[in-house]
Amino acid sequence: MSAQIPSHLSELPIYKQAMQIFVLSRSISSYLNQDLAYLYEDGKEDANIYVSGDIVQQSVSLAPEIINAELERCRDKKHRHIASVNRLTNRLYKNCSRLESCNSNGKDYLPILKREIRKFRKLQTTWMLTL
Image (cartoon, rainbow, N blue to C red; front, side, top):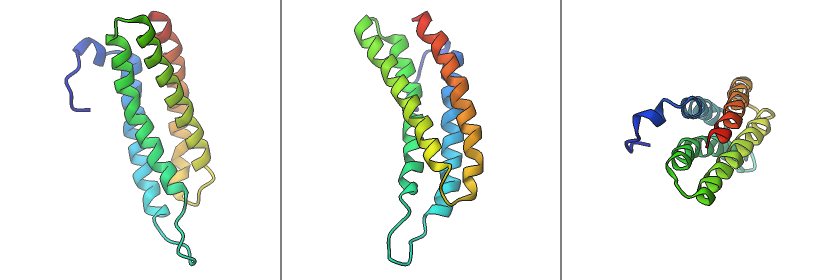
């Protein structure tokens, strides 16, 4: 995410919210990973450790898709980026719900992330109408 983006795009409320979700999901994931990195007695690992990585990966992808949708001139391609943002948001929310049942103290922070995702969805609705 080090690429330069036009300044007017970085001021978009939906972009700012996507960046907040990214920072929050990365912090929560690192906190969860500390608790979920152990191995069970039978040598298996907790499957939720992968889901915690998924929330980071999905949140990383939100902002570039928003930028791509804003900069795209072709209507069909623009709608593909919008659909991608929608899919990422839905998966991110579902993965947060899955992690709420994991055995970690970090799960207490997941409702905060889910609240931010709900705010993002409201912004997303308005944003899609402006494109």
